[in-house]
Amino acid sequence: MNKFIIGLVIVLAVAIPCCKLVVPTFGDYSDGERSGILQKFSEKGLIFKTHEGELAMEGMKMSSSRNGGASSIFEFSVTDKNVIAALDTLSGKNVTLKYHQVYHANLSDGSTEYFITSVKLAK
Image (cartoon, rainbow, N blue to C red):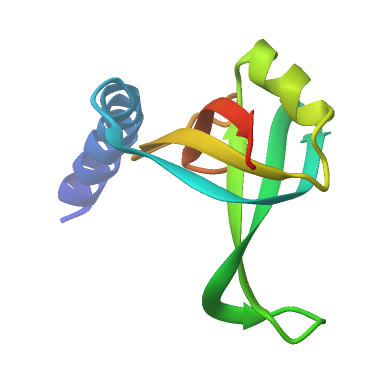
């Protein structure tokens, strides 16, 4: 019985890291776009510095905002330097973000599964 448990632990110790290598390769889940007000955009992390943001979307009834309107927060990560530069100047503005969603994000890429590929100022 002890040999079985030790063998199972060894197999899991090898299999889990291998799965984490394969999933990002085949991990693209969806593409889309979301519009709203860029509420927050910052660089964060202790070891791996990543760029993370929040988009406040109007009309969703997931949480209430202070002014009585309904809003929802879309959290995202950014790796593209051009998109980072654009988002740095658009805080508080109404924007449309194009994104791709992955099954698994590496810690060095971001803390969310949504990665922004482009940004434009909404009218």
